[in-house]
Image (tube, rainbow, N blue to C red; front, side):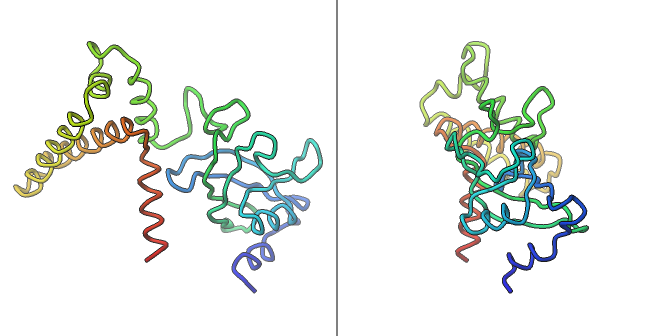
Length: 206
């Protein structure tokens, strides 16, 4: 029996009347994208197609996430919780997850996402600001060589703090380094999730 088949066989289907909640998480950046429900067939289809399938309680039918919008959720992994009555689906979204056009169904004033994602969103927002009043906008309006130079400077300062045993300085300089890396990535239309994805691909190939 495969690991995937074992997962389906050991879930507690009775507790939820044949359904289990499915917490859907971005596999690379940790954001919670949505909450759905699945029956045995939905998870079978998910594993067979490597695209998330769920059971619609309102329409009483099986559906593939993104079947009308094209914004499918590509499966990376499925895991059960300790009580075997809830499933965590780690996915890679192809477009917005929410029907409102937002990346997650939990976006809002108190978005449920890691702080680095909030910082990336702030950098994206500041990209359209007046360069005279916004440091981020000024960097993004400058030639890419300027952003690369700033990252190099912060890298040197981080290395020097580490070499001299300055823990407080290292923490501060490392924060500056990460910030300027995010700005550099933004200027190249990349995100931290793209970097994490590259690390994941290397790990899988190792």
